[in-house]
Structures are given as structure tokens and as C-alpha cells.
Image 1: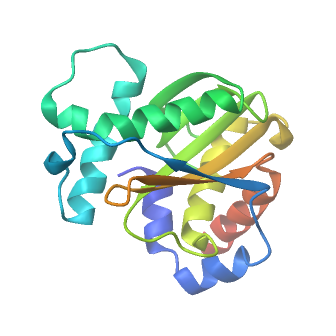
Image 2 (image 1 turned 90 degrees about the horizontal axis):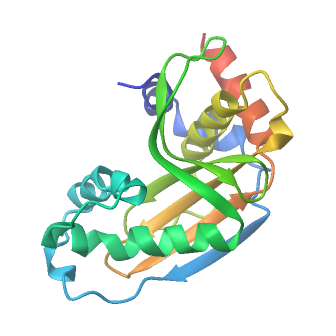
Length: 196
């Protein structure tokens, strides 16, 4: 299991929510996903549907032929990709392995991007039927740790971050963007160091 995911699953939601209580996205955007004739192939169980969507993230980085099952999920991936392009993203790398940085061991983020609100960015995709208000602290901690790994030993202001909440049944994606990951990184690293 990737060390960031392991850490955030073990993190107390109460502690995480308190740590990020005053951290808000710079802007949000709701994407309406176009209807697809393959929607009936999407798993009804939110966990299975989320797993299936995550399993298909690599489709964003290739031109392989799509199965019918892939076609059920691709409108969500394509809509997210199109939105990221509107904010200036030039390159999307799905399921990106991240090298260990300092105390954080090997991890893998959903989407590493180049361009957009800063030279580099990280997008974490969450699925379900809810759009938590505010964003869950554990989600923000995960995003902050991935951003830290992408920044490496460089400037934290050179990395932006976003949470993409995908509702497969309402056919929407709610994106919460942070134009700099600095505050996310500092809060997440503080939680990491206190847990060590």
C-alpha cells in the first residue's frame, strides 16, 4: 500500500478536519458529464464504481481501444481532462508513482499534471454520492502530502492541487482548486510529523 494512503486511512478524521478547518479552495467548478448510452454498465455500489473509475485513470494517458465497460466511465475521465485543459494543463500523467521525499515513502497519486495554475500540480479523484462540505481533512492531508512529494525540495508555490469529487450517478464532477499547495503541504506535514 502506498505510504500516503496508509497514513491518511489511519489518520483520525476529527484531527484532520481540525488541522484543515481554515483551508478553503481558491475556486470550485462543477462539471456536468454528458450522458452516455453505457451508463447502465457503471457499478451501482459506490465503492465498486469508484474502484472501476480509478482502474481506468490510465485511459487518460493512452489511445488504446475502449471496451464497452471503459466507455461507461470515459465520459467522466474525458470531462475532467477537458476541464483541466481549460485551466491550462498541458500534460496529464495518471497513476503517477512518486519517489520518496524526506520521511514520506513511495506513493502514487491519481493524476500528476504539468501546467495549469502553477508549473506542476496534483489532482486527487474521489468518488461517491456525496460532496463533503467542507472537504474532508483526510482528503486534504492526502492531497498535501502528494503535493509535497511533487514539489520535492523545490518551491511549494510552484505546485497547485485539486480534489475532484465524481458523482457517477448524478453525472457531475465537483472540482476544488488550490492555486498553490503551500498551505496544504504545511498542514499535512505537520500531521505527518506529529504522527511519527
